[in-house]
Every structure is written in C-alpha cells, then in structure tokens.
Length: 135
Image (cartoon, rainbow, N blue to C red; front, side, top):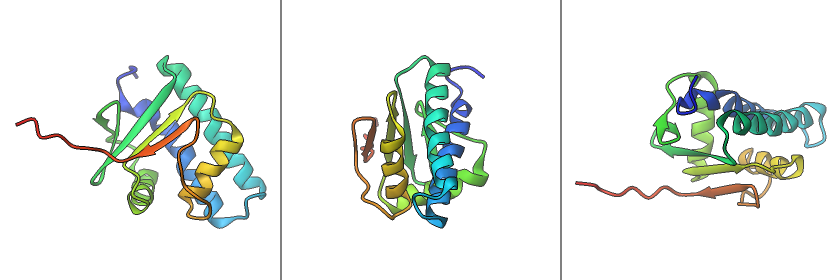
C-alpha cells in the first residue's frame, strides 16, 4: 500500500467507527469504551507514522468518504454507518492530528455518538467542504 492509497486509513476509520459504536451502547467509563478510545488514538498514531505526516483529513461528499482527496472503495461494512453519522451531524470534514490524546479522543467519540458536545479541539478539526466549480 502506498502513501497515496486511501486504504491506508481503513484501520483508523474502523477504530473510529468501533469507538463511536461502543460509546453509543455503553456508559463512558465502561471498559469497552475506554478500549475503543485507546484503540482510536493508537490507530491514528500508527496511520500518521506510516504516512509520514502530522495529520489526516477525511472528507464526506454525499455518500463518499475521501482521504487525500481520493475515495475509499473498500471497507464499507463499517464505513456506511460512519458516513451516515458524520452526515447526520453535518460534519463534512474531519482532521485528526498528531498529539491527539485519550481525553480529546473521548470527547470526539462522545460528540459523534450524540452524547456529548461535538466541536473542534487542538487535534480535531471539524468543518464543512466548499465545492468550487472549475468549469
């Protein structure tokens, strides 16, 4: 897998989806939730290390999830619910940066599970995508 292959982000996306699902099912102090948040942080740092970058940005455009401006074509079993969650919360852009810790990740997971407040932090940037007509 090359750095430009968006599939490199699949383990990170799976960890994010899993953590959000755990939090939707269990209280915030449940071992599964803690495990999910820790797994998310570990997956992010591993992904960034493999890519040689300090951050990764995901874009949601309609039913597509893009990484490095390229759509992900695999892993739809857990991607479809994650895309629905992001769209439902009007999140079109999600950037995760090196330095994300368990506390920040926990707040992100709570927000995506619609249990806590969803907002940008030092290592999490949420936003909208602006499409520009090139024609």
